[in-house]
Length: 315
Image 1 (cartoon, helix red, strand yellow):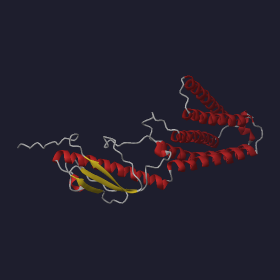
Image 2 (spheres, helix red, strand yellow):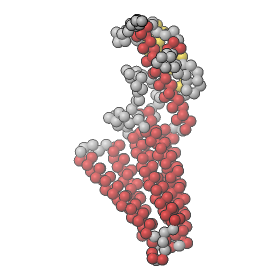
Image 3 (cartoon, rainbow, N blue to C red):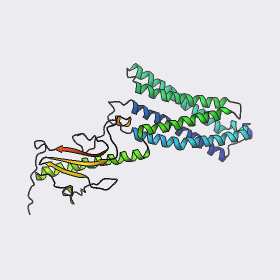
Image 4 (cartoon, helix red, strand yellow):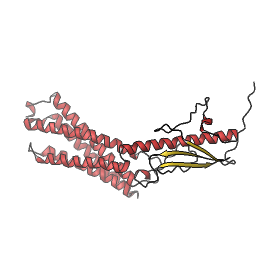
């Protein structure tokens, strides 16, 4: 049969597109659940891991696009196989099937090796165990499915429809789960606005302190901080464009206020990530805030921030 049928450009396109979208879906699914595990079981030693929400968004995006494309091309391929059963013996189809079996088998072996190594090294945490389990289950499912597909003789079977429905529900449920971790798109947008507000306040705080060290007095208003030489422009609220609030409390104390869309005090999965400090926040002061108007009071220590007298310019 193989000698009487050859791959057409349509066959090449469908098989390659199908396998690529399948790999993307598997990678996206594994990455998505690894991010969920990272969020649920944070590692206190992982100081630089701050991209859980971003990882969830990317993985969800990959799944929402690649997986439906995979199901669609699978449907086209099955429809083609039913009308022309001889295409089951196409070299391209067999090469891609055996290659996928090879990749999934190697993934299982490496996953188990990693598990044994970490177990013998005494570093088997719940976080690590769950990650190994996710990779093992997904790789095992891929290997089992393609092995079954290679050996099956029935051209038309209800198993494929059942698998498509189950996997579709699983993928959709996995993506929906992300809303409970990273929030809805509107919540994410508000969180980015709040991050920008904190960054603006940190920049202005640094400028206020620098102003005091040079002039031995706090600026009377934020506009005093603008400098045409350095190019510093006082920022405004990124959403409303309203000026931030600045108040002098005493000769050495001041506060900066902003209206926040949400709170970063909630004990959610995302908020368990290691706290991010801006490079402008040199002393890692507390920038925790609730929803609404919040003021951050700061007091300058004259012993810590020495005044720098201006050097007169000679002409």
